Image 1 (tube, rainbow over the protein chains, first blue to last red):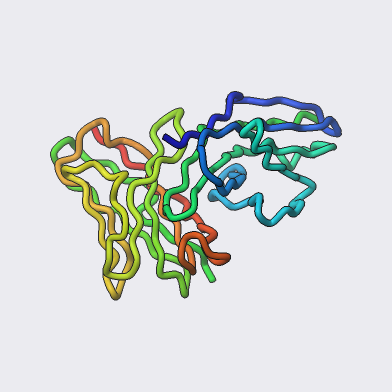
Image 2: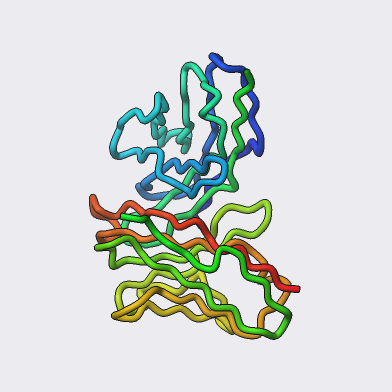
Length: 109
Length: 117
């Protein structure tokens, strides 16, 4: 069965420090992976998807099929990055997004 | 475009009552998805609908739960005879295009928090 694992419930970093939010998945085929973000009192919104290969708000994520990972990275964290981050997976031919349990990122001043 | 709208935002029901959750997709979106989030868990897929059709309801409990997306009006998630275990946040998402296409990005509503007393 497909599964998405985000091992950290909470990640605290200081402003200006690098950030890496971990996401591992299990799926034997070719997945599509996403990162969604939920800022305080706002709705869940798409941050980036791996097929776009783009950087949004300084964040990047690379799909590593060998390690079945899709970690989210940013070289210098900012206070406004504090939010809940969810990794999600979908597979060709299905309609379901499978979400991880989320990681709360706190960027400290 | 106001985004995906869900109402009510908070709903309190007593055990045995019915809960009706509404979702208005973004303008021009004909694909609707419902997810449930239990405390300390990620969002779990429940059902995928297109206008007037249920495409995939494999994530929905077989009893007491139903969903519809009529030709006119919002999508409705209906829970009959609610139990305490139904207490959760229910999220709706919509997309303009078919899954697996370049227009399949899901846009989420703010959610409805259901509390069953």
